[in-house]
Length: 291
Ligand code: FAD
Image 1 (cartoon, rainbow, N blue to C red):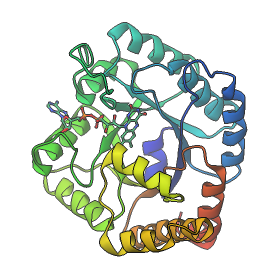
Image 2 (image 1 turned 180 degrees about the horizontal axis):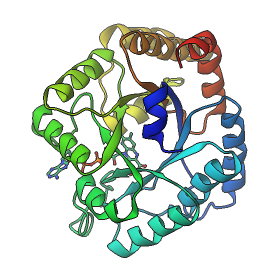
Image 3 (image 1 turned 135 degrees about the vertical axis):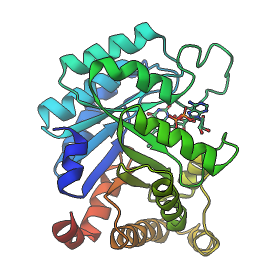
């Protein structure tokens, strides 16, 4: 089923996962075991990332297909235009079609450290990829940024491109990670003002180790509010208490988001089954009554 159709009838719970790196394909078996465990938590869909350099497309297709055809859960396959040629995109899109994968999150992709003009040669932006993918009739989704995208001059310019994504077929959006819900509410409110109508699913990542803070900050630059930062520092040297804080803060964000009308929750669990289990256990009744 197309995810935009699911969103018309209910709130969605979803998990983000990633395929093994190129050259570590034997890890696909382990990742499938992870996916089987995640499936037991009854998500509405599971998304699979696509390597920034386009390196692990095989793993992306194989896992999205496994989710859809073996686990009978909707798959949201990410696809990045930046590192790809039209031939690459056609090859992967045809694989998606062959495997009955209907939902695609169309992205530009993170610029690699060795970024040069070759990157983004054929698909400068996610919008170019969306335009190109029209012929395949996927349900398209787009990424959006509660704090504005790091390369964008203003939130308003960013919103104009978000609107363009909707005009080019994006049926829903998934946000970048954020730790201050006010940024999400501002994004939704400003998006509605410029006429964007599609559901905007908030993306939540529980910080469960000090290492994950550094990784998250460098990857997406999301602001950590002062009161949360103080707590993170206080519990820094006590791993179990630190984890507890990460789970509880994510649960607090989720409870607040649902109370204010979020159309679903996308959990950046990044193949961590324990995180997915902990969060869903802590909001078990909320899931029963509000999803
Ligand atoms: P774009 O929409 O192209 O935006 C990039 C910048 O260009 C923004 O500043 C935007 O305002 C501007 N812009 C957009 N359209 C235009 C236009 N038409 N003309 C001029 N300027 C424009 N990365 C991966 O490599 N693999 C993944 O699987 C992956 N999954 C992600 C999932 C989610 C939910 C999110 C939020 C991000 C994900 N990323 C992933 C990271 C993402 O690729 C980066 O954030 C990247 O820098 C931007 O991708 P985008 O699709 O938003 O790009």
